[in-house]
Length: 183
Ligand SMILES: CC(C)(COP(=O)(O)OP(=O)(O)OC[C@H]1O[C@@H](n2cnc3c(N)ncnc32)[C@H](O)[C@@H]1OP(=O)(O)O)[C@@H](O)C(=O)NCCC(=O)NCCS
Image (cartoon, rainbow, N blue to C red; front, side, top):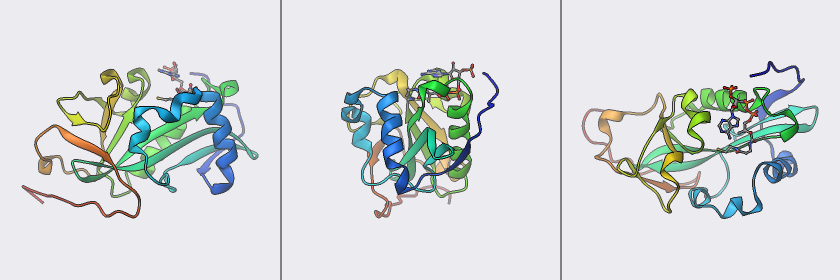
């Protein structure tokens, strides 16, 4: 990877960033992207304090957003979409956005992080590949894209038998905790 010689800062996204984020999404994804199965897991607003942008003096170079989900009824997060401006790809901005946002997620109450993405990109952050023996989803996603990361708040010993259902939720919905076993 090249070293980053660009002047930019990673900061929390604000509503004023929406147009720039739309621009990055348009550059990074096909127009059909928002119709893909993964969007069934995105209800309501992104999680503000985890959703970050790489800001070069008002022009955004990259964006990462997260949505709240429930994994086996546990409060969890969905990583993505992640997009970096094509003119500055390969300079570490994507990795920096993932690392900084996951570091913030580790300080929260979320237990698991789910991603549908390329294994080559996400395994290096500690994600593990999962299959449809491990999870269920509202709609089919290619199995090779399914990855889960255990966050520090997870209590793996208290999780129910697999498969764990992954369903959308919204920020104002309190997760129903069904805790069995050790606390
Ligand atoms: C994927 C994306 C965010 C990467 O951003 P970036 O800033 O170029 O990535 P970085 O410079 O931080 O990381 C580069 C590394 O990621 C790898 N990489 C980049 N895109 C990749 C992809 N789609 N799949 C697998 N690996 C990828 C590079 O090979 C490089 O690996 P290295 O560090 O071993 O050399 C960017 O290419 C993008 O916006 N793509 C379009 C949208 C997209 O596909 N988003 C991800 C959805 S899962």
